[in-house]
Image: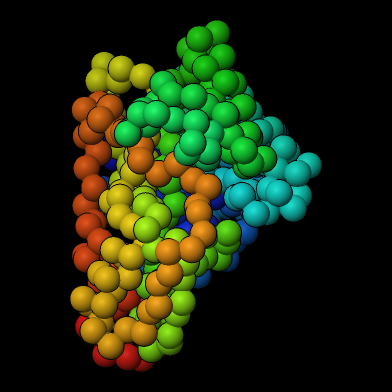
Length: 319
């Protein structure tokens, strides 16, 4: 059954893919964002089908009005300042990530006869650095102790979500995705991951460290479908309210080898130096069981699609 979904951060990277995924499933979508730049939506071919509404998550009245005016019945809340921006602008991170999320929860609580569920983005950044865990796979009940301001804002949001669910009956589902990759990705602290694919795709050489370090390679389309599933999964299927979702666990060296398999002439140099601070080995058993989430892109298919989009945009032949 078709519904209207409000996607906060809906003109951003993951947000645009979430919009496209929801539209593909027959829903009406409103992209709510402080930026009305529809470039990614246009690249995905869904700009004309999408209602874009400029808004500010930090303005509680504006959030309520957006929900009420659009008639949305579900919210996919993705709007946030990411790791690097949060570190550089800590006060803005608190206003957008924490109070902005509170404004979304308040709007859903106030309009509880309209909103059926809020599916929202927590993050794998809520976990402590890897050395804190003995288990091979980290599930949702393991230690939550972030070492970044961004992760701390997401941890706080999990706490306030628990209160809104327990005290006010707010129906919500939070996801802890890892690092997204895919066409039109924004740059950031993990830009080197994208460069492993983007540089060779355009015929450029690239050197990267961390060769033996495992990364979770999560295609953005997989993250998008995860949020759609979180928004629409029957409540009786939910055994918890916070879920890990991941992609394919592989080392940087294995990723580089995959690029070479797709593009034998790729000039990539990989060293074993450096150590990544992230916890990537997330157990997503519950997301599979409760949400029906399954990874659609392995490394080869995800990287090949990414490479060919880049090459097409650059006027090069596909591989």
